[in-house]
Length: 212
Image (cartoon, rainbow, N blue to C red; front, side, top):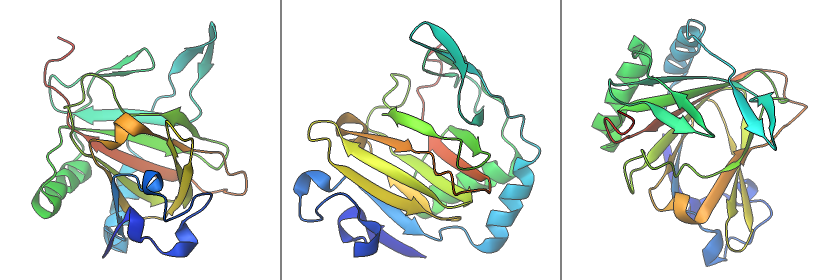
C-alpha cells in the first residue's frame, strides 16, 4: 500500500498542470492499492446485488437520465440531496459495512453513508461539481475508492481553472480533505476507449436528521 500526497505524485500522473504551482496542489491524499485483489473481487461481486437506479435530473428545463447508475447506502436519518434529487438511505450491505469499519480503524475516518456510482463503460461520466451540499458535515473528509476499470479523475481549481488529472485504478483510495470542496471541482470525463465497468464508492459523513 503506497500513500502519496498529491504534490508528491509521480510525474507521469501529473497532466495539464505544473507540479510547482501551489494552486495546483489540491488537498487530497492518494493511497495506491488500498484494497487487495481479494477485497476488490468480493466487493465487485457484492455490487451485482445492489439496487442501482438511474434517476432523472432537470437541465435547462429538460429532464435527462444521469450518465451512470447509483445507489445510496447510509445510516437512518441520513437522506442525501444533490442536483435537486433527494435520496433516501438504503440499509448497508455487509461488504460495504465492513469496509466502512476498515476506514475508521486504519484511517480514522468516520462516515455514515456511501454513494455508489456504476459506470457501465467509458460512455458513462460525471460532470464538474463540488461535494459541498449543506447536509455534509462541515470540513469532513470524503473517501473515494475505485473498483474495476481504470478511469481518469480530473480536478479543476475554481479560481485559476488549472487542471490536474489522476488515473485511478482498481483498489486505489483517494481522500478529498474537507477544504478541497471550497476551492476545487472534480469530474469523471468520458473515455470512449474504456469498455469495462467501474464502481466508485464515496464514503461521506452527513449531519444526521438534516432532511427531517
